[in-house]
Length: 181
Image 1 (cartoon, helix red, strand yellow):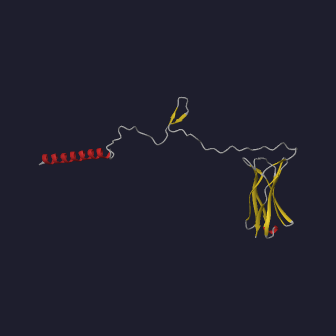
Image 2: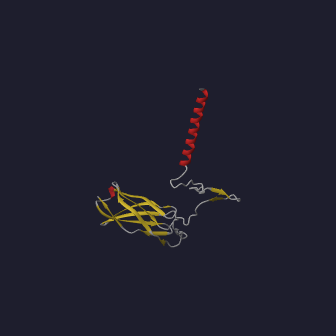
Image 3: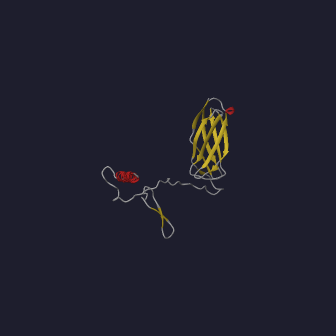
């Protein structure tokens, strides 16, 4: 009885092992019968390698073009003491913000320190101004945070102009209308 039981257990174990082997064989084949053994392994990510000189090399495709910003031209101001040059002033926005008229802009293609920005609002025969210090940034000179409070304005359509002046440069923006309720 003991020998028959051992034979039965060994038979069942062999059968399970054979079933697992057949299942593994079937699972590794594609529907068309391809096992993939003939195809080389491919990577979806670039793998770096080190050259003898210590530099890194990425395997994979080399980009054919790279996005870059168009080069910008920045004009340095002329030396102080001479005549001023005309610069392009851009009024980026002017709006009624509920407490008054606020505006900002910049001096295009000019990076300099020490200038003054002036927002002038005109209506009929009256005008009001707000001034601020211009600040140089990477490619322009910024005129920000200019505001005329509600108390200095009457309801109606006002014309706004942003002006810039320094010891070396001067300019004014196009006029833009702003409505004061």
